[in-house]
Length: 270
Image (cartoon, rainbow, N blue to C red):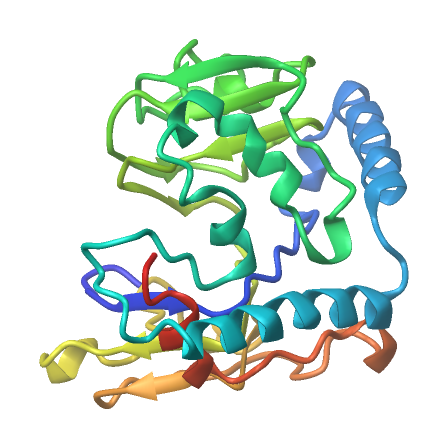
């Protein structure tokens, strides 16, 4: 989606860590063992009851929405007001940067038992390079995520990272881009986008209003990509061209998203 300048605000984030089988033939036995270990760790932290996880998450959001209605007159330059459950957990702490790992205690939803790199050392990314997948340089994202130990990964500066191949990420890692402007693009050859309850605001340029621009692939290829949109709010002529199976998961495994119109209230002070 290069060349677009969408202002993107998300009401809910459903983080789906998908094991993309791109280039699977290149995996050696070592990486297969690492993948098996990571899968077991993910299953241990995963909440297998989507209805219960959804209820808990929605209860937090409903509480924030009601609180927001009572605080709409607060000056944005005045007292800190966090209007969604994740922000409320850390944003109003003026010393949050000294205690970044508090974010690990803010997790909600299906993966709320995860801790990421909370118990590991801090790894500072100093380079946006992605030139050698087999032997990545220290200070790069690809080097950080393949380390065997838990790591809390932060950025020394704002950067744009363009991945040449899929990101091989091991367990117990947190990528914390707060305080910097970070964009991580590309990666696996068959991207998956499942957009629920988001808001897309298009620029005035008519040629840049399509959220799902696929300039680098023919329709015969991208028509099978899993790109879906549900309850999203499209502003100023923005539009989303869906592709692939609209229901890739069984109903019991789906979490219904609230509409994108909730975004304004949830991120008012973000």
